[in-house]
Length: 67
Image (cartoon, rainbow, N blue to C red; front, side):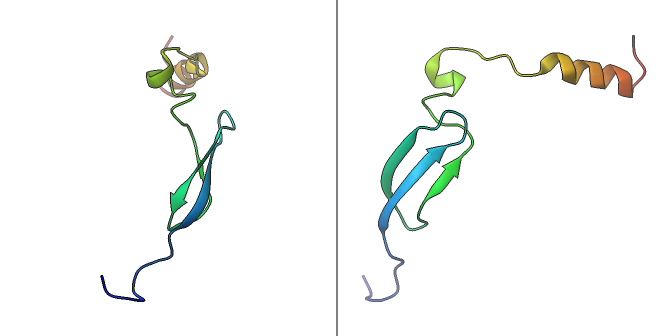
């Protein structure tokens, strides 16, 4: 490898915005925040959370004047 052309590889904390879990790893970017992680994502946990689906349906019906 050529010297002095590679970014610095340092400790970084990655924090989940949904559940607050913090993962310590190494990165060239530094500290990061992710929207969802494997600790709270329904695909990995096997649980399902209800998101405001009723509000979305109501807005769609109102927008297109459906009953």
